[in-house]
Amino acid sequence: MLNRQGRPTQAGEASHEEHLTFTGNKALQQIEPLIFEIGHREATGVDIDKPAPFKSRLGKHARQGEIGLPGLSEPETMRHYVRLSQKNYGIDTGLFPLGSCTMKHNARLNEKVARLPGFSDVHPLQPISTVPGALDLMLELARYLMTLTGMPAVALSPKAGAHGEACGMMAIKAAIAAKGEGATRNVVLVPESAHGTNPATAALIGFSVKAVPARPDGTVAVEDVKALLGPDIAAIMLTNPNTCGIFEPQIVEIAAAMHEAGAYFYCDGANFNAIVGKARPGDLGVDAMHINLHKTFSTPHGGGGPGAGPVVLSERLAPFAPVPFIHVENGKPHLIESRGEAPAGNHPFGRMTAFHGQMGMYVRALAYMLSHGSDGMRQASEDAVLNANYIRAGLADLMSLPFPDHPSMHEVLFDDEWLKGTGVSTLDFAKAMIDEGYHPMTVYFPLVVHGAMLIEPTESESKAALDLFIATLRDLAIAAKGNDKERFTSAPHHAPIRRLDETRAARSPVLKWTEPAPVKAAAE
Image 1 (tube, rainbow, N blue to C red):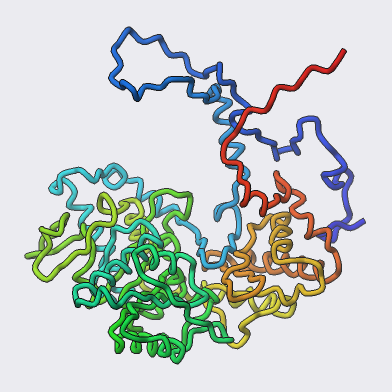
Image 2: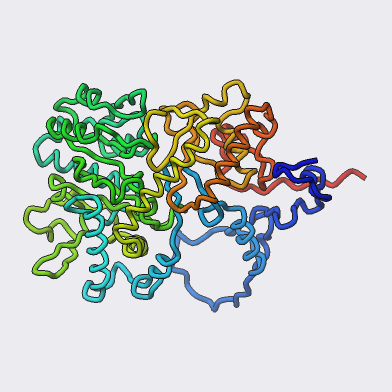
C-alpha cells in the first residue's frame, strides 16, 4: 500500500482513527483542556501571607465575591501555555499564504535592535530633553517613508492600517472644511473590491459611501469614476496594487479626475510591499496613504498588540496632519504636542492617540530599511511579485484565474470555477490544506470573485518552499477533480480540533466558560 508520499506504508503508520489513546493525546500532539478545566478555584499555586489589618480605600468598588479564577502551580501554568503555543501556526512555522496580509519574515536583527535598552525602556512621559535619540530616529524613519512614497509629510502616530485610514480621511475632512465645503462634500467613492475597512472608515467619520464597479478585468475605469463625480464627492479610497493583485493601470488618470473635481485621492497602502522602490504613490497623484509597517517593513504582525500605521500626506493635506509631530526649526527638532504649539500655516485636525506612536515598531521598521538599503527594498518588491507569479504559473493549468489578462503583482487570485461539479467548495479546499501543514490562503475575498482564493507568498520564501507548496496544492487539486470528496468535505482530519460549525459559531457564540453540571452518580 502506498501513502500520499508514494512510498510503502510502514508498520504502525495506519491512520490516526485506528489507534485511539487513553489520554486522547497523539504522541507530541497533546490535547489541552481549558485553564478552568485544569485548575481549581479553591486552590492556589502561590503561598501569600495573610496581610496585617488595614482599612480598604476601595469603598463601594471593593470586590463582593470570589474572583472565580482557577489556581495552578507554576509547572501547570507553564505547560498550559506552551501546549497552546504549539497549536499556533505562524510565519516562523511555515509558508503563510494569506493574501492581502503580507505575512513576511520578521528578521531577528530588527528584534535585537528594538530590545536595546535605549529603545525598549523609553517612556512617553520622559522629558523631551532626555530622548533626543528617539526624536532623531523618528525623523529618520519619516525621511525614509517620505522618500519611498514621494510625499512631503508623514504622520507617525496612527497605530495600524484602519487607524491610519481614519487619520488620512480625517485630514481630508479637515481640508474640505477649511475650504468651506464641509456641508456639501460628504460622499466617498470606494471600489467594490476594496478592503472592508475602507467604507467602514469613511462612514465612521461621517461620510456617505458610493461604490465604484469593477471592470471585468478586476480594475477600476476612469470613465466609471468620472461618471460619479460632482460637487458632493470628497474623495476616493483606492487600493493600488488592488485587492485582486493587479496594478491599477489608470491610477494617474483617476487621480487627475479627482483633483479636477476638487476632491482628494486616498490610497490604501496595504499592498505597498509590491511596489517599494518601483513606484512612488506621490508621483501617481495620491494625497494620503497609510503604510502598514508590519506588511511592508517586517514589524510584528497581528496579535492585537502595539502596531504602527504611519500616513504620508501630499502638500494639500500636510498642514492638517494630527499632533503630535516633530517640527525642525534652526536644525533642532521640536515635538509639537498641541494645536496651539503648531507653527504658522499648520492646522492639525486633532490627536489620534494618547502619545507619539509605538517606538518598538519604529525601530524595527528603520532597522529593516537600513539593513536592506534602497536596492534591497526594491529587490524585496521584485521578489514578492516574482514569487506570486511563480505560484500562478505552477497552478494555472489546474486552478482557474478570474483575471488572466493581467500579470499578478504581490498576490495571485484564483476563483472556484475549476471546482464546479466536484462537490468540493473553496472552504473544503482550505480545510484540506490544514491537513497538509499549511495555513489556508485568504478565502472568499475579494467579494468581486466567487469562491476567491487569494495567495500571497511574499519575498520571504525560497524556491524550494514554493515548489513544495505548489506540489501540495496540485495534489489537492487533482484529488478534488478525481472525486476524492471525503478528503475535503470532512477536513481537517489531523488538526487538534476537527471542523467546526462556523455558521452556528457566528450566530450563537459561546463567549464565557460555564461550569458543567455535576455528573449524577449511577444508580446502585
